[in-house]
Structure formats: structure tokens, C-alpha cells
Image (cartoon, rainbow, N blue to C red; front, side, top):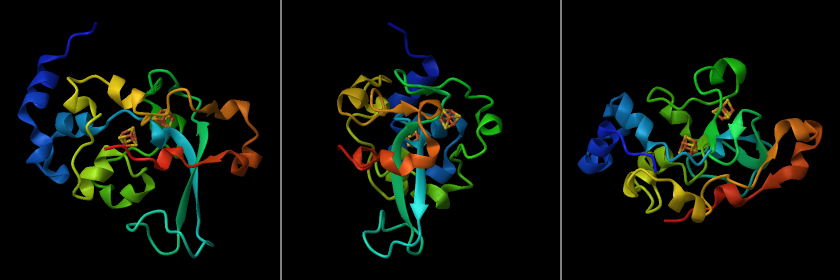
Length: 174
Ligand code: SF4
Ligand code: SF4
């Protein structure tokens, strides 16, 4: 079993997410907030014609967000990690790299996204790796990641992506 790095152990022990605002976190603190669910690697779209059932109370205007179960071709569907992390924004122009600067765009993230939760004043969920010695197994077993739920974008007809709309990415487990 992989051992936690000294840096990650120190981060976990400090419980910094309870006292430091997202905007004030350093790079390591910021990166560790990502729970690794990979829901942000699913294809999604906004329908601004819809005038009811708002996806989120922080969404803009009349926009509604829909998630599909179609995953980016660079996602490792078992580990839920990006196989091209360093080059991801070049390879996939629509790949959203959440930063402190684009936090106002966070409504693009699912309600369970740990950045979004902190941004909305909520605590990290009990399954978060930072609360489980750096491990992701509780997140997977709680069904909060995309593991075993997706199809590869190369295996589907993207012109019919509306057929693949799913609601499970909107689920939240505390
Ligand atoms: S949805 Fe949020 S927490 Fe989950 S992988 Fe994406 S950025 Fe990280
Ligand atoms: S390039 Fe990587 S991080 Fe970006 S959407 Fe694809 S799998 Fe996710």
C-alpha cells in the first residue's frame, strides 16, 4: 500500500480547509481539495432555453446544467485520474482547470465537488480523501466518483449525446 507523503500527512493533520479560505490556499493546499471524483471529466451542457428547475441557485440566468455519462478519452475510468494531466488543457480545450481566479465559474462543477462545497460554505463530505488518510476508497464506495459508470467519448455518437443524460453526477452524500 502506498505511503502518504510527508507533505500530505502534514496537510491532513493541519485540517487547513477548516480555517483557510479557498482564495488564500497555497498550491498544495488547493490541489488537495480536489476529491478526485472526476465528475468534471464528463461531458455536460447548458440549456439556456429552460426556464424552470434551476440546476443550482448559483447558476447564472436561466441556464440549466445537464451531465452525461460520457467521459473524456483521457480519463482512467478505474482510478478516475487524468492520464494526460500535464497536457490536459492543450489536448482538451474545454477541460476546465479550476483555479482561484475562475472560482466564480464554479457552478459548472457538480454539487458534490469539494471546491464548490467549500465555496458555498459547506464542510468537506465524510468520504473525502483528506478525511480518510488520503485514501479514495470511501468516495468510490459511496458512489461519489465516476468509477464504473461511464462510456468513453470515442465509443459513442456525440451527435446523440442527449441520449446519455444522467442524474447521478448530481447526487450528494454527506
Ligand atoms: S468535480 Fe471538483 S472535486 Fe471532483 S474531480 Fe472535479 S474539480 Fe475535483
Ligand atoms: S483532459 Fe484529463 S482532466 Fe481534462 S477532462 Fe480529460 S480526463 Fe479530465
